[in-house]
Image (cartoon, one colour):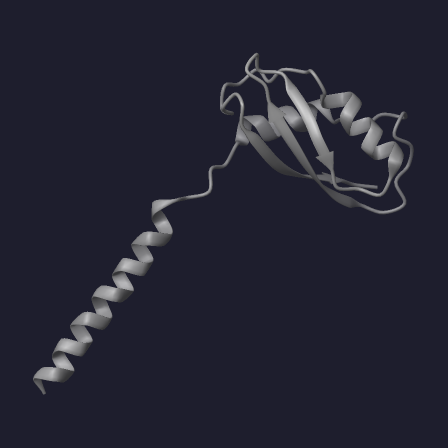
Length: 112
């Protein structure tokens, strides 16, 4: 009986430790940056009509001066890739949510 109680206590402590470990490193939500990206990437006639909606993973680097440099855009559509790079390269965010010198990846949803 004592062994059963000890095992239950150990199991409960292990369960609590794993739950708290998940909460220790929450994923940061960049609400203002997402809004600015949406404004900067607001498509116009230059992109043309997309045949279907696409989600593009865009990797950016924020320079020490706060400028955006697009490292890659995960799309096969060359005109969309060009549009993303032209719209974001060397622009600056109004918010200071991002750390200069760091790389970030955002999923951008383009609807047809």
